Length: 123
Image (cartoon, rainbow, N blue to C red):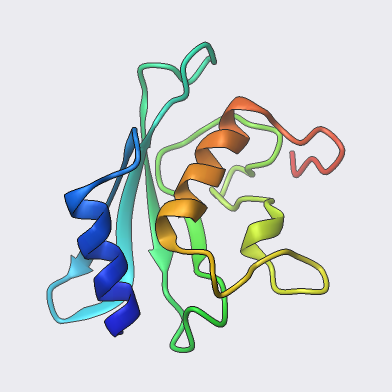
């Protein structure tokens, strides 16, 4: 929990462009809310997209479960808001690493919105 608190403090003081994250519950950090702005020069530009992050008890050794709350049409995001991104999966199937943090993960999702992975479509 202390690492997550440090990450949230850093994000609130110096947020990455177009990224916000907050605890959904004052008593627990097991669920976070987040929003990202649609990347420039994409169909998502000007939009704000809400997500839910479910933080596992062994974070950062396991990746958070991230789901879009805002409906979005994207080849790597299904109609339930689930995201196909290697950073959200444990090795060997994915590339989650405990050195990554919430801000990096949200920025990676923002980048995925701008550059879909057509070799691994979900929809």
